[in-house]
Image (cartoon, rainbow, N blue to C red; front, side, top):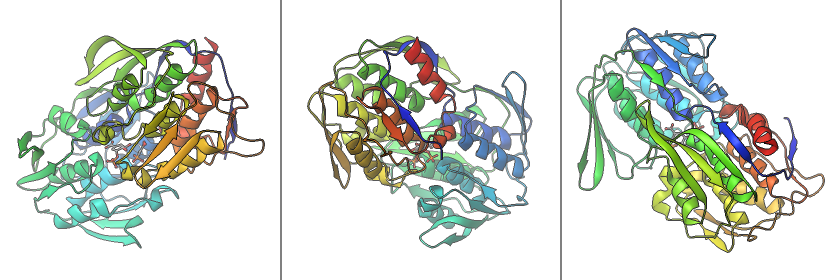
Length: 440
Ligand SMILES: O=C(O)C1=C[C@@H](OP(=O)(O)O)[C@@H](O)[C@H](O)C1
Ligand SMILES: C=C(OP(=O)(O)O)C(=O)O
């Protein structure tokens, strides 16, 4: 555990570049690892979660190497040809790696054991065990449907039509990935849209995938026994990482910060919309496409924020950005109410409880409800900061650590957090960029 105090600093200025998108990085390694031939990936996020995916794909037989210029070169094994891993797969802190790779294994004639850290070992896996069992896979999971678990794939697996009971891109992707090696057509019905990187990228890798609509719901159909062809992937910058700097520059007076190359896929761009509703000054400069995804540079200038009622319908498009939105709300004028956020309780930590406790410790006024937080903002006045000797508990959750680092920038006595090491799961350059932007 590495504790750290984040103190008030000057305005955030200059130009920064956030690392590659975590969701796209995971998928690029998985799909390249399933293609026949050599793919090249540039801009890959080299965070611990993505490295866990790389290690697992190697254990399934893909050859993965990093070249000196940072390009990742992947020689895939081919759909249907995954090898049985010799050892348990350590997924670390990463829910995305675990659930998507469970989907892959489910339709191959192999057995794999998945383990993870204390945070991941508490997260629900029944949401993928249920549909993958319908496809023929069998499981031995820990009590409560958690890791460690052993998964025996079915070959051939059975195609299903599965209506998602939770708005989850991980569950959607697990079923679609199982469908890749399943004879026939596997369908996922999505009542609420979630991030669509799997659909976009699988199409790019040559899978036959159709996205349609039935009765207002999205239906995704994947044709099984697919042959994926290799491709070159350029990973755009991660909007979930940019989020910390979007909020920091919005709430620190005098800031004028440009964040380069931020992915703005509509299924990910909810925070931008909500911050603008609150009065943020964020301009999209040079909009373009990178790797099949919309991207822009974001110029963020300090602006007074006003509390709002956040529409719960936008939650899936900013599901990982709520912790830092709560920090913005704590500095806004008036009250911000959020609802419909039950899913936040099953992330790396219970993010509603963790952020309510953290912000309260730092001097904010917060009420916790079953499905959201109500936050009474200071109107721009700094928070008091954490009391001497008391640290925010980060609970093995990178987003709690980085959100409270941002809160420290607008505090009188600084915000101390008990552990900065979880930041390496998704944003290893965070501390350096924070220092760089504050010193510019
Ligand atoms: O598919 C993905 O890459 C992700 C989906 C989301 O999880 P859920 O599907 O559990 O909502 C998100 O919170 C996670 O950080 C990444
Ligand atoms: C929820 C997250 O990731 P995962 O589910 O992959 O652990 C996140 O990065 O905020």
